[in-house]
Image 1 (cartoon, one colour):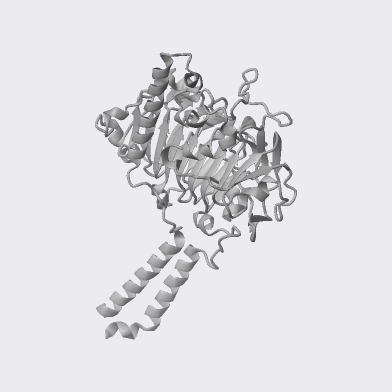
Image 2 (tube, rainbow, N blue to C red):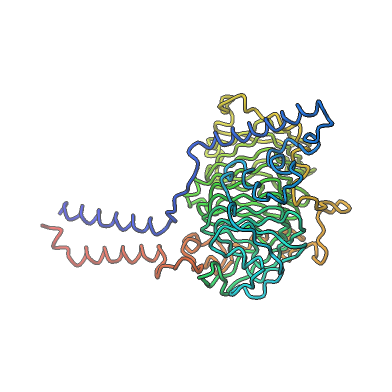
Length: 502
């Protein structure tokens, strides 16, 4: 009897293993083996840029001093008056976890001359959509100022740079930007705003492939199972769902020098606590300005290692940094300005966990400036003075936070108008998502993209196996597959009970 039972148990265990395989995206996470060393190197780079600026300030007539800010990204390329003749130098200026994002470096320059998006299934040459779907590396620039109103989400192929320098470029409409199952993407100096759900249509993702896409969420930039991504000097606001969301095993991401405003749920890193592969997610958030009319999620993190460094948080209504599922938060040299509301002074928010659980999470504050009653609740190793590995990397930059973030957002673009923030001619202050004009109405629970027809919990399995034109949904969902296998096992046991007496 016992050998047969053992065989049966092994067989059933194998079924559970197969279900586990079917339930998760097994793409390698490509995470850095020592994330603290990446954070330390970034801080050394900032300190070196600041020291160089101070040294040159002794001779203020030096032209180099006039362009230096201490911001290592900008100082890397903006001091060259002929930067437009060597645009691809930008790819060498990355920092943090996304520093290896090469974008279209080494590829041809593609000039977008047509702002239309009339045929997402067969894009017109000269349009942005035609550029981003190509197989080869491309450095994409724009012939003039333009507003690109997308019909459906813009699906980007690997090794692409979207470089808006020298033009005033706005991306809006359906979608907007989707980075899915790809790598080496740079998005620089672009306005992304008023993005709304769209889809249930055929969309071309490569020169040789057209696939049906379900309804998108209306994110500004959606990063799904991708790596080596760098978003720099963008201005984002007024989208239906998140301004930037990175989920499903995405890693190697830097979000820098960007300006966020007029939104509820700003940034989501990791979609579901159950998706443990996001423990390999590593994101750098540096030199950004979190501005007017923001509510929460700057970012909201699940699993992973998130380095938040030298950002200026000037507004939130609920909290700035939130998390669940034991993420590591390394907050260094930021300025947090609390709102007037006495019940919203805390920078941090732990979600879906009791205090007895989250006290072990590593949330650290190092050299942050806390203004107007703001307070950061550290936990885990963040409570220890020995958390930092090298005192030489102590952030010396927080006193220069104005200088480091003064150019956040699209370069040269106005950020304020009568105290109301960014104004886009031709667009209302609302994205149509409710919440008094804020974006981020959290439509994800009801989105057909996830096969979730009735709200409630997000369809975790549906998200992994959704039909997206690139992946094929399995004929049975994993829970159904499991139930069928258990029933088969019970049938074998009950109809062959004589075997158990052998």
